[in-house]
View 1 (cartoon, rainbow, N blue to C red):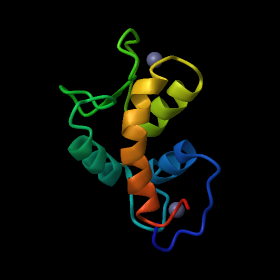
View 2 (cartoon, rainbow, N blue to C red):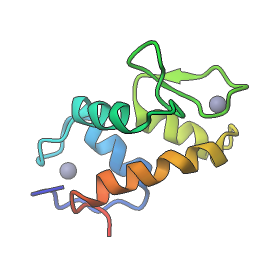
View 3 (cartoon, rainbow, N blue to C red):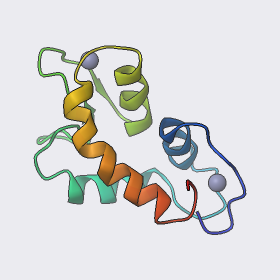
View 4 (cartoon, rainbow, N blue to C red):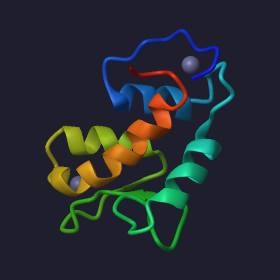
Length: 102
Ligand SMILES: [Zn+2]
Ligand SMILES: [Zn+2]
């Protein structure tokens, strides 16, 4: 992110940092939401009915308010990782486009 000096080991960590609203780049949850809902047109992780994120594993009913929380949920092995890979690219370009991850 512009002006952000933090380095993250994982993409999930970067997303959680942004969603916390504490990033000096000015990117916050609203901007992450805006970007993801605009780009996840197939609703892999975004809910079609509410401003929520859903587990990409269709057999799992988990929904979270934050994308970072869903990301962690997937990383813990809930299933749906293959589907999540489709939005991971979107996420990576969002984060790396702002200069956070290289
Ligand atoms: Zn930051
Ligand atoms: Zn799940």
